[in-house]
Length: 411
Ligand SMILES: Cc1cc2nc3c(=O)[nH]c(=O)nc-3n(C[C@H](O)[C@H](O)[C@H](O)COP(=O)(O)OP(=O)(O)OC[C@H]3O[C@@H](n4cnc5c(N)ncnc54)[C@H](O)[C@@H]3O)c2cc1C
Image (cartoon, rainbow, N blue to C red; front, top):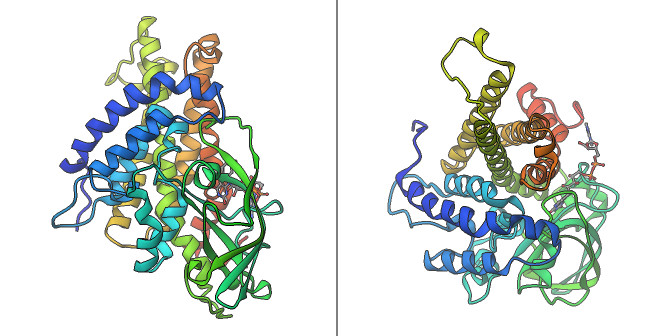
């Protein structure tokens, strides 16, 4: 099967709709929700929920026309959607119902019954959100080996205790909707990574509460919260994966998390590239209004420094987008994409930070002013380097895979 560089026709159709949403529902309220952190963009949320329902989809993964035959396009469609809606506004994109990391974890690690039980609510009457909580106050990059939240079996129930921090959409999942959060906890603290499992904690479960909402540099339309679990009782079947601990190399619990990240890291990359594209387009437009044209095709030695810089930025953007698409194409083909997922996440994190920073610099006061969204995009960009594994951690993953080193040999 050859990779094709042309946007599949079915995706092209839905991108026309997404572009309209981005232009008409996101851009006009971008500044408002940046300045009114913790207000919820219900118009956008309701619209997306109803649109997905109309398409017969519950989660973002199965949004779009149903495929009849041939290879799946779900992940590629999701990448195009993430790019386009982040071009509109990345904070609002992170408020898309049914598009969170919790659903992705259930998809990657749940049984068919669990998928039905937890994901079917996404296509109900009201928008529903999902989140995933791995990070704890003492560790983020070192997860999941350092998970301290415990899950103890008590008859036909699990009892969870611990604290999670920086959970994207946690408030929407637990307080603003009948959603769920996937909590990573250890069922055997002595077993390290092998003892760690994801658990689905549904909204309204006693013992699970949101304890703090963060105030952030960027993506301010998206809520980020701390969650406390205090003798939180769950039905036995809310564990994703095996309740048995196998203390050998398989580390099955951890592999579940990795499967999630292989699917979601390219989405962060796509989202980052949406911000970068928005920035480059506005930068060129503002330069053009001031009489600066980019003379494509002339020898590089005759270009101005500005022209060279813009063309270099466009090259970074396009090459990283191709890497992201390759990663999603592999996922659609059900082939391993761990290296590509981490590579595109690293590259996109670098590219979006470079492009947004340079745009603010090149336009001087105009870039720094709140008159344009450039300064906001500069603030929104940085998170793409941080969450879902920082740039440093994803570089380590790539290096280990290429060099065939274990975690202990290269850390
Ligand atoms: C807005 C936002 C949303 C988030 N959403 C979620 C979410 O939904 N769910 C969730 O579970 N988490 C979430 N996180 C947490 C995020 O994934 C962590 O912040 C990230 O994994 C880094 O962990 P840490 O903050 O503990 O930093 P640390 O692990 O302490 O790292 C600090 C610095 O050291 C570097 N570093 C660490 N180890 C190494 C190493 N071995 N080699 C080289 N450098 C290293 C890191 O790259 C980083 O630069 C979110 C964070 C933010 C800011």
